[in-house]
Picture 1 (cartoon, rainbow, N blue to C red):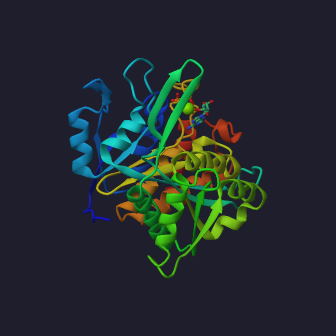
Picture 2 (cartoon, protein in one colour; picture 1 turned 90 degrees about the horizontal axis):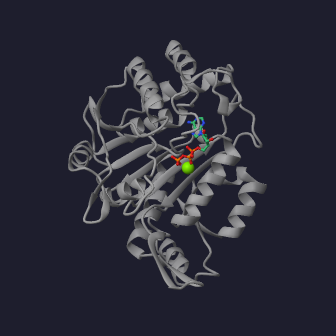
Length: 338
Ligand code: ATP
Ligand code: MG
């Protein structure tokens, strides 16, 4: 990755619904931690250009210049001509990999304890290529695109990530028994990368086997980075959030591109609790921590994560974690620790 000099300017997309509240919390906590970040407010629209959803030029320029953005949840406007904004962002900036860790938290016992998944999802193709055809009223087809180029990029990223976080194995998950051409190519690409990094072993698992094992024996994957095509990755990562954490309010993700990376909470805009000071800002906060690590400011990330997790362990937590605190109370408690 390219090097960043401090202070690091970050494009900040506050997003919709609870986005405003959780962004405010992140800004306050980062300031208290002394993280050398300059926020550049960035409005991503959307606008319609050539009959398609597009991001305003000013926002594109900001993100291209800064190379890193922190993004709140974006509600997808309902109506003709609106592709999802999230998809638009991925395509605009070539964000080929989605990195999603999901780990158990102390002080909030869920179904399982001590879970620690790291999953990399292909972010640009597969079923999300988005081409469906209506043959007639009763028959439809969908086109799933897999290219060796995108597969290689994402599997290499998973291997690099494994090396970076000290995991020994990468497991490539596909259903190549059912989709021998598309999933077969993804798997074959993984096989061709067997000697890309001699310290990391590459294994292969069928999706059905992986799903079964991940629920039955989740600890098996502590030593792995999991990598999968788009749709499988989407399902696996949500499953992991449910298994490990039990709240979308805790799960961050990173959308990685060659030049630009965008960090975000995985949850939506949560219109049901927006404006009520009830949202858990942790997912956005931890996305900010992934950003800090990405730009070489890992020490601030550690400090912030430690303060947030200690706050939760003490029982100061929001409703999604069965706590009674408001977002503001939780945020203030983290700030007090810092
Ligand atoms: P969108 O259309 O933007 O995706 P949504 O209606 O699908 O919004 P989500 O944001 O995906 O809603 O959230 C699903 C559920 O999880 C909602 O009940 C919401 O309140 C809850 N939730 C999501 N994020 C948080 C959070 N950060 N803190 C607390 N609860 C949350
Ligand atoms: Mg949603």
